[in-house]
Length: 139
Image (cartoon, rainbow, N blue to C red):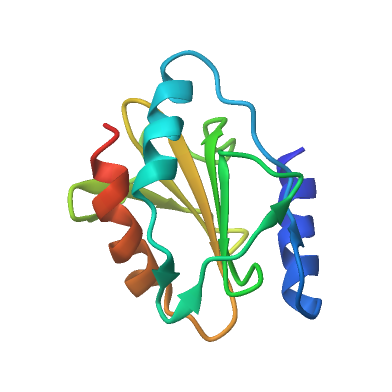
């Protein structure tokens, strides 16, 4: 399922304009409230990319720059993340970088896992720093 979502985002990166198709997650338990709160805190502009729309519409998905940057809140814990993995900390948020998918990062919070795909000419570190501020507010 996760691989399908990543594939959909990557296919959207190759597309031209319009609504971006992203497989929305189904958060459970405390992640629902955390993701609902995060949806109200996300920026309209991210690293120079305007916020776009996704299909199917979901409060748990946000895209910028026609899907070049995509966020999914309430995803499962990354399968490849081991308990001993070190997370990169940015503004108080720990980020897991998937070694097999260099454009995929997951914010690890007490309330929810937040997956971010960063493509195109965007610098992942800058995007993650901008997203760490609102994500830190849902922990």
